Amino acid sequence: MSRGASGSSALVPESFMSCLSKVLNKSIYNEAKQPQVAVLSMFSLISTRHATKTDPNLATSNTGMGAMALPQPRAGLMDIPLYEGGKSSLKGHGRVIKLSSNESALGPSPAALVAHADAASSLVRYPDGNATALKSAISDVHGLDSSQLMCGAGSDEILCLVCRAYAGPGDEVLHTAHGFLMYGIYARSVGATPVVVPETNLMADVDAILAAVTDATKIVFVANPNNPTGTVLPGADLARLRARLREDIVLVVDGAYAEFMGGADYDGGRALVESTPNTVMTRTFSKIYGLASLRVGWAYAPRSIIETLERLRSPFNVNGPALAAASAAMRDVAHTKAAFDHNVRWMGVAVQRLRSLGLEVIGESGNFVLPKFPNVPGKTAADADVFLQSKGIIVRRVDNYGLPDHLRITLGDDDEMNAVLTVVAEFMGGDSG
Ligand code: PMP
Image (cartoon, rainbow, N blue to C red):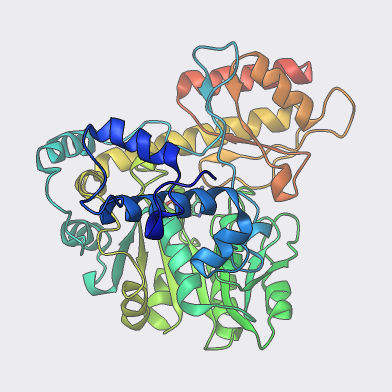
């Protein structure tokens, strides 16, 4: 380093001084022919920054910190598998038939669309954090006490809140072998251990669940009907499960597909919520109501559980347009009935045609079917999926549910159903009837 002026400026190089003088276009020396104090401080700042960038030893000593370390997620977090939603596009196909995510065949109620559009005029305002109008709509249509309701950003949010509230490290969360994948993911997200309980013939098995309970069990998730198996636990079995579970275990009856159910034997969990202090029933607007994109779900539970979950949810968890659309959708019971009837009709047709092709279909509930394909080269579920995709039809592979021989096919509209059943028949080399 060449020396500049003497004394306190001895370490300021000449080149720096002349450069600065040119840039500032004025003298940088004081009357004593020393660089001005401001110049000395500027040099000191620049040289320190430069050293920090280029010399790791100086960086450590300058900042007083040890070696730089990136933020580390909590132990086990990076082991959580990423949830993969259904595909919605195919290379080389402009328009596709998307039957991969159990969305509604008929779409939302027209009244919901109007309410959603109207809500655009008040986007400047925060939504009603208590979802008062939506809870009133649910309460009116289902005859439920509003104070026992909570709305969430999809029922997903509520499933997650239940885990956050009632499970943690060292605790176990039970779900059945082919239960909804998010149960295990949410359990792990709070540091709890998911415990997978075997099913019998794709059906939740109450005795197996009870046998898997330990002192560490905190939550049991049962989807009824279950996705992706389409099987249903009869009301008496659900009641027996609740009666034999310890009182401190929360039983979640996930009714994402409950609105597609009819029949006296079906139990959506309501009676258990009303007769026990530890059962939660969840529902969604993503399926029969056709509002999957808006992310709205709800829970019906004893007040003590609602009050617990309320402490964890973010204050404006459901957005304004979603609240408006969901309220209108809930009140449009005629549209819901039309969607129900459409589903019943196509469930019957689809199950009958698939079985007539020699494909096994066990569950017949929900808005999807789960045919099992032969484990024969050229005829497997993977082959069928490729064939369907070549015709622009997207269904759901369920390998990640431990069902590599099955495909889950959402019941779509009339044209979509005719198309998918014809293509599966063509694939199987038969006539779909
Ligand atoms: N439970 C089950 C059984 C499901 O299949 C789904 C969606 N696929 C959900 C809950 C979550 O639904 P959402 O968050 O859209 O309300």
